[in-house]
Length: 188
Length: 355
Image (cartoon, rainbow over all chains, first blue to last red; front, side, top):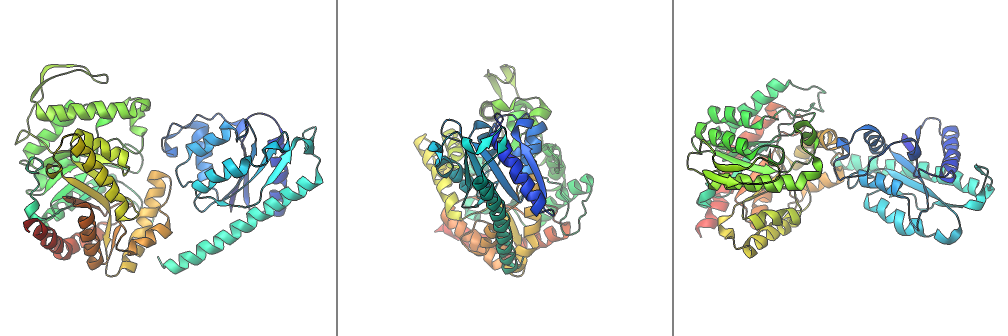
């Protein structure tokens, strides 16, 4: 199983800090999973111009191919201007329609306050749904106050991230079961 | 329709088109050489002619897993190897070529073939050829519109004055040779959206509509948009042929047909397009309303006739060779088309026209 942790911001530390917790959880509890953390901060990506993702070069080609080859993706996103950051939206724009077909996608949100707790429901989920992701229904919303010195200090958030990883893996397993069952029924 | 060499009394035309893909056969894991693939395409055109098919076309794709980048050269070989079947491109990416050279090539193919050549001009779904041939992909639309328009002008005028943004001006220029009957049928390739179809309608040129999957009725909307736009722009839609292309495979039963064809399409699309074909959607090809003409010969006949009833199109182009399909399967398909499918389609669609 191919799983990616996608840290969707190119500035700040909260999203990456939480993603590191997720990464540790996956590598410790699911050693068989092929996990890769992709932090958009580490790459030089071009803006989507509508071409097929196979026609990009460099980091843009590398990241889009990685995502297209993944079975599951855990996205970490901050909130910028009451929405997801452009860097993350650009990833979605770079990918084809239906890119998340037969992929499980879950996410957590980091934010300065509780004001934006519906941003993910209103803006991230519809995009993921449009791209045909098998969305894990619950997500984790993490406020500024849960971090201290680039560390996650909130046990409740820590528990919830553990459950997020577990839910992602379980959803993948269930989706695989459904896929195989259908596959057998098609008989081709 | 005469201008486009279509005689509706004979019924809807049936043709084959290939993108010239050069892919590994997913069942065997083996890939034939580029040379063999090109030879087989030429052979396929001969067999199509022998089976009584109306049209055969070859496309250009400038990227990995394709082999007919020089599609007009392949078409010239086909022109020489055949006698009666109409031949064309599917498609010619006019955006990244010089319309003068394209016209010279196809007029020559028309003379070699004794008046059988056609051009279907498209915009390309992948864009590697812009880099390869030295064009800016930012000009994707403008390049096509300007060069397609020039191509049409060359078709209508042996001598012309022309000025544009993407090519040197033509001053009282003569484009030679002229095709046998002085005009080539030139179609616009349309990828499936009404917006794109409407562009063909505005220009009043024949439309070749590509389908991948989904219900036929969805494509009827596109064709309606094309004809409505053409009408509003002052063109006579009774004189404008519509062609429809799509996946094709016939086998003893629909289940067998799906089983035999799915891996080619799915694996081929993964490599050439970056995404496979969802199996759930492919399974719906069993329904008569699906635009995918994969099934038993009888089912395929019913589907094509159902599509004809909806679309009222003049030409159907089957894509049966995508994804590394071995030559034996192609010859078998041609046999089935010639012996079972073609007679039925001509009988029903030809008759409709007489009434």
